Length: 457
Image (cartoon, rainbow, N blue to C red; front, top):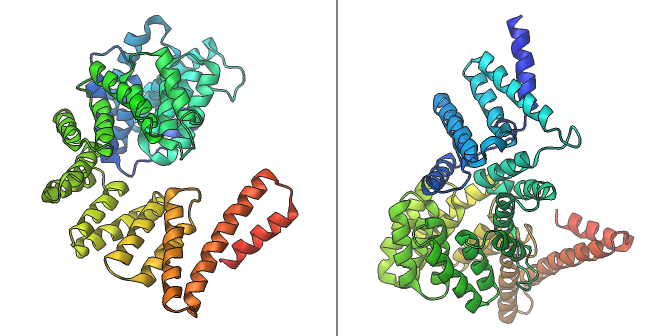
């Protein structure tokens, strides 16, 4: 009988909407733990809801097998939610109660698990949704936050969650804030500031929350992306007046300074931020890049911070590529090769940033190792990945340059014309894809695209 009851309990748990059913994965669990803990530490004492952060932290504790600590973090999540929302906190507790039910189930305390399921059922009956498949906005919001925290591949899922939450509650600052961050992180290159959905959403948050320094620096970075430096500078200065000691503000101001030639100011801010969050992989990356920009005499410091960033976040592909490039600049081709290979392996395994890695690795092979064949192979691989990116275009131009130089030396070089043909084929595929986007029923375009793709297999 007990086994039947246990099976019924597990079946109910699997139907919940909470961290345990969202297929969350964290290949860099150490980095997630650090980021979540830093956020909690920096937010303690402020009038902000950090209950969702404690829920995220509880799930990382569960993933490590620390069930009692996970339960304690969920208790803190409930406490913060009650303090923030008072008597109107019931809907905000649905995800927390679901997590409690799962943790108690894994602790073999099935009576307690069922108790939290019963609590959830009472809340759902009290606050029914429009349909059985619809979720409360609080669930969409917390789900979005979880997706935003764990792995970058979940960012599109996070965006969808925040959009659904905002459809139901368009004025809630927390949902607008999360949506703005997600758009900022996922937005590709656009032609103007006004065209940018992230810019629009960041301004929306600042309408609702005018003193949100985090949103100010992100909006400033967007202005800087489109060379609107006066507006960017104003936002950075205002943010620093409001939150001069918060690393999630100063790290972006420092990044802005580095990109605009104020390297000493960047280093000063980053060192100050590291005093508060010394285990931040992102801060170590930024400080390593700033030292690299300052002078060749600071190679050692640059390498030191980039290595620390990778140690804190073992799959930090961006840091690996930067470190490999610095080793290459320092003529240490052996270390550069090792780091590029490591970055390539991680990027391939995670299906993440592979185009950036291949393009930089190809540059290294071409200019440092003088291995044109391997460079061509890597550039071609990059062209088979995501289109409409700066790295795609750079890879295409590098292949065209290689082909042109070979032809200038030998007008009858068949390989060179083959390289040209390959690039032209890839550009043709891009054109036909766009043609079909605007004329989806055109059989001529569909046939041509199919033939081109088959020819490259």
